[in-house]
Image (cartoon, rainbow, N blue to C red; front, side, top):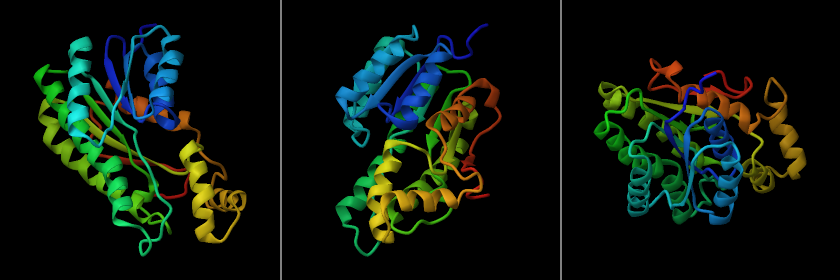
Length: 262
């Protein structure tokens, strides 16, 4: 059976762990050339070795996705090896567990730079590559969050940055539609990743609870009574990255086990 991403080149940011890593594996299983971007050199190279075992070409790059200079250099390296880019998956993201009245300006800026500015920069450079190379049915898919739609106590910077991602997704979809490029966001609920485990440790303090107690509280708010796996989110992102989703664009779709129905 032919793999439906065979010969295509996919860039994944935040690829060293969590949803980004799970998605990179999904792309590789469908035959894509894989470009891994992450700030953690050791982890991104370890992920690259795992994915190479699937028999695809993998290019691991250490990139600060908030830097236009580093992104531009990285895209040039990708172009030199693969020429065109077919799929961009923006998975890099961070959160901070602070009340709005307590968060420092530098911390606020860092969350917005990683979660929002990176999406703008990567989409800009990759979009130009897709247009230049007349890529047929190019795809940009971004990790947003259920927190973009329902505010969370102690998570204001993250909520606001992800709400902005949804808006940027709509604008990019409008501006790139004439080139056949689809742009969508996925809004996961609570996903069992390293980042969420860090949230349990830090935000539980704000809530006055032990980390395990706080985790059970959050799971109890989900009608399906469990956390999502990174692979479940990656599977839907894979669909949005394929030609099966050519007529879907400008959406911010929630996958949250019923936690939010908007």
